[in-house]
Amino acid sequence: MAAELHVELVAADRQVWSGEATLVVARTTSGDIGVMPGHQPLLGVLESGPVTIRTSDGGTVVAAVHGGFVSFADNKLSLLAEVAELSDEIDVQRAEQELERAKAEDDDEAKRRADVRLRAATAAR
Image 1 (tube, rainbow, N blue to C red):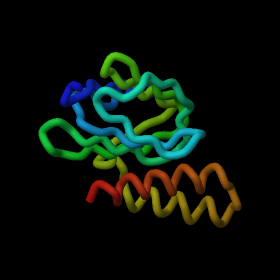
Image 2: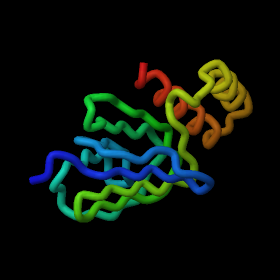
Image 3: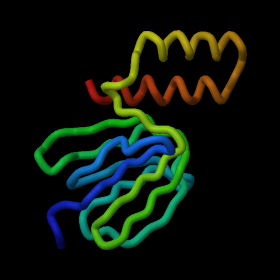
Image 4: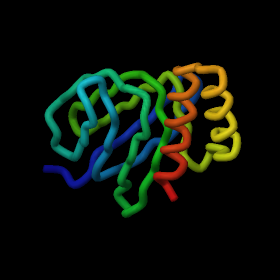
């Protein structure tokens, strides 16, 4: 079994992150899934949630992902997201304001997006 897998995290508008990893955890419609080198091939639908990537150099990359697809084959993992942003790109204060506004307007979709952004931002710290 290989010691690492190649990961591509791509949003509709840009490549968010690319590199080698030892573990990736993401939320799918079937629940949370962890993918390590040598995992069975898979194809799934991503739910909104934080994606955690344990890099080969021992670091951690966390991203807020909102929908999309995940596929794995031949030690290559592709996360194709509708929207994705790295935790260090997230303005926590703005995300908190968006969450409060969404609660006041009773907008479930906006609440979910803001919550995912806040969870990703705090998970990386």
